[in-house]
View 1: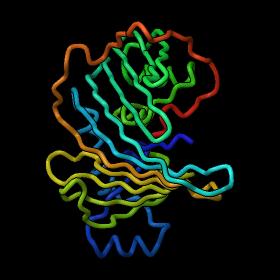
View 2: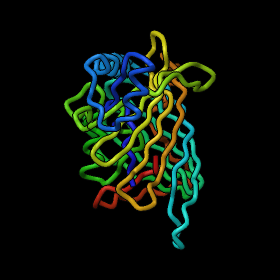
View 3: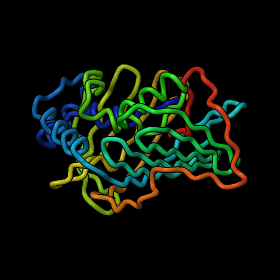
Length: 256
């Protein structure tokens, strides 16, 4: 199951006061507040306007075992982006690991433990590359929706209700906590207070499945990032083996 984390970021609205948020919490059919949209656009504009950044995440997600029991899988992610055409991603979880390298011309996906890698010509921007990789290669890089911010693929139109929960503490700092609903997901998002309105935590539940699997991720941002010259290129060692992409239906690459 691919959990669209950044849909959360684009699909929130804020309300103006605690009493209003309490009313909204009691009424899940609350409408979208125009003032909330302004708060959302502030975050959207800030994130999409970053020239480069590093994002370190810690996440957990539910996985249903063969006997029907839900188990928790933990993992970490590291993203380094330099717009418009450079991206490096490292995903590690309890099941497996994946590395992604995009240098503006080529996308390379590496299975570091198995020593396999596959490369393919890529589109000229991060957003186009991610969309093309999902459509043609069946590769969906976790948090790909981050790069939908500021584009015509923003999922902001999918929300049906939202409300302000209150102030939370994430990574030792205050953040505004919001809850919302979409067509097939229930979302929560925490956005840092202050002049850097960055999404620092997200929780997603899929109510369409009987097990209602949950995904939770916290994030630490480095803006701007210090980026080494070789960050976006992959140089295989002697024991790495090149393989071809298996063209087919989209699959979960790295599961969040």
